[in-house]
Image (cartoon, rainbow over all chains, first blue to last red; front, top):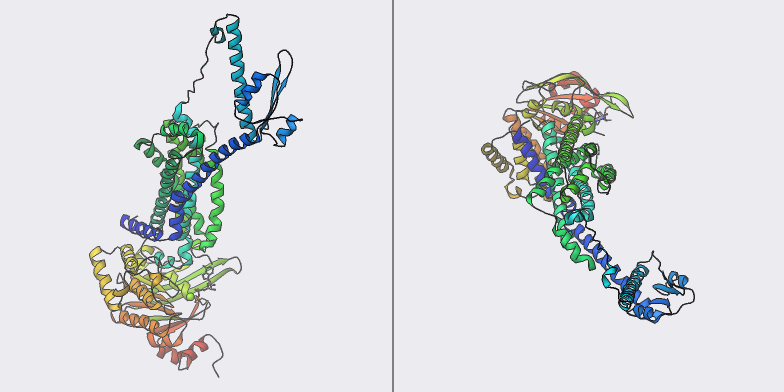
Length: 391
Length: 247
Ligand SMILES: Nc1ncnc2c1ncn2[C@@H]1O[C@H](COP(=O)(O)OP(=O)(O)O)[C@@H](O)[C@H]1O
Ligand SMILES: [Mg+2]
């Protein structure tokens, strides 16, 4: 293998792909524009739904069948209008009111709240009622104690605090780290698709391959030069996606939760170490993806045919990429041998900050081996004249 | 300069099964000579030339080009040849200058020699005006000049041309014909395939007629005339293929 030849091929492929509109769209526009816009729309939609259920509950009001004046007063304090209804559960179900409360006389009286949990409006109203009643109950107990001369501190024989040992960074990781690996890996495949089809089936279809093959470059030099260019495109797509996602998530406006969420997001360190670890993780994946797609696209005679060969592959990749983001998987060295899945899980672990060096090493080594095997197969296929001159 | 020895190529096809596209073909071409491979469509011209350019591996037999064997030293063979085919295209998103630089690098040309040679060819072919324009914006004639420059760039001793003027209008085809004549004068060994009789008659020193993968005969126009008793190449060709003569 002669390095200057490989370099010349790499240079030509990069020049060619950076001038291709289709490639640029899939490589840059999708991660930099489409993704952030989609994310904006999604978060805006979520907070609008929250706001809407609040206003809707306020307009619909509550059906109340209560006799005790203090209870009625507590309900009125919620600001929701109170109505009379015959059939309380039915009125909630038919959405004529957001929720309903019923006081059943007795000793002690029982209070029943009706909500329709499938409806966020009703849930929100139910929560409001519950809070109001709880406050009233505590107030009443306090008063009774005061009247009978019992000190108030009998109410709190002990205090309980629940501490989340996960820490903010881990919480942030589990909140969004799950989708991050999945999206990055998916976009690596979609981002690599166009340049790879272009440099294989595209060269065949446009009849430029023959002159290339008749040059003194060896088949292996051509495969290496081309795969490296494809790998660069894939890796660039991955880094752009990662950067764009982190930026969108950090700057997301998530309605009422935004403060809490923002604090959480700020705990994700985007220092050189984390970025270097993710980059190191993604390089063998990029080579693997490039060589794999290269091999498949080589069989196609035209760009269209290439697309129909590679699109199913993207769907195959979705499954392990998505699985890697699911909670409840304990990453073991054995699981680190599963391609795509291992990278998806490791991205998550690195961001959350609980990546073990053993798992990281196994993932890196396994993916390097897969990349090597895929590259070897790509070279073998490129040496087959039945593949290159398919009629 | 080119020795072809009993070269054969068999394809395995799901429709036709195993069939010989080139069947034990032998011939020689000297330096300074234009050898024309003449035959109808599907005769095996392209396959023969692809075997010589090492794009395909022979099923049996071999060929030696300027001392390099296609079976044992394919990469070296490719360093000896300039290969041009009528249905080859140029990289649409690159400029002629970029394409020439790329092929120069593939041929291991030193940067200085490369720049000098590119400049020389561009002057010769009148390419300077469009050297920096993407080839998808160029006319057929400009593209053809670029293709010729690419073929001649590394000054190869052997040119392999597969129906280079097919589908071109007369002025553009002339550019190729004069490039072939110039190359011949400078002592290059040229093998050239066509199914256009007039072109072959005009350009070739010797002609080989191929049909169904078999080389029927080789010789100069004079030798072919004597062998067949016919005068024009068209008549000779029909005679060799066993087809009825024109009325
Ligand atoms: N890659 C291939 N696979 C199968 N058959 C082929 C292939 N290339 C050429 N052939 C067959 O070989 C024969 C010779 O083709 P070719 O060399 O292209 O002829 P020509 O160039 O003289 O028109 C034809 O019958 C053609 O169909
Ligand atoms: Mg042909």
